[in-house]
Image (cartoon, rainbow, N blue to C red; front, side, top):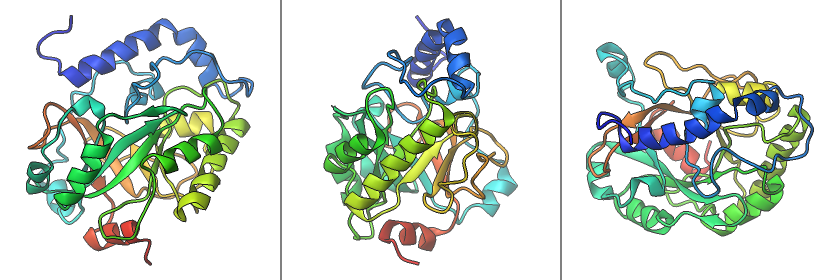
Length: 291
């Protein structure tokens, strides 16, 4: 049992982290980037239970819950006021009142659609439609499981089950959420996995997939690869009250997930908070694939 002072989502993170900690010796070997390209048979995150940030603690070798508050300080908040605020959600949040979310000033959201090669998030359809109807610019994300299949097959599954795109002012390109372990892949093999996913998603939708990751994961598992920097917008996970760190190989970020303990009207409990790097016109440009 977790203390009452720890949120449900933090408790879930601790549960996952506990499993990770018991396998620390194995994971450190996998995270070294020197492992073979054979996927590991086990994963600290049970299949179907992945969500944005579940691997962040593992990526940073830090098994503490995120207790920082989603504020950058008065002056920083004022300077970034023009930058649209967003959230990312999955089945962990349960039912969401998207009209209240929009009324709270949230302009965009990505929501979990798929994981691996077979799992579909049970809340995705309702979230995708209701966010659209509330005027929230929304998109779908896929939780990567390189231990299950190749990247192209997972991109196909994603594109066919929520990851499609249309130019309608309210639909963002899909996201590849890749975090946690290196899944037993070498850095070269992981680069190929990501590129295979990108190429198939681009062929299916006409859009460049957004990559969500942390600096630690990208630097460790791909070797700070720069090969995606001209192709994919970066969504960086870096829970900090200061300027975010970004992975080697990317010159800048497009979206920043800055906390996992945000509070937003319409969402029960903690929710990840995100900030777009430009103003609303640039957010719309990303949604509509315009210059």
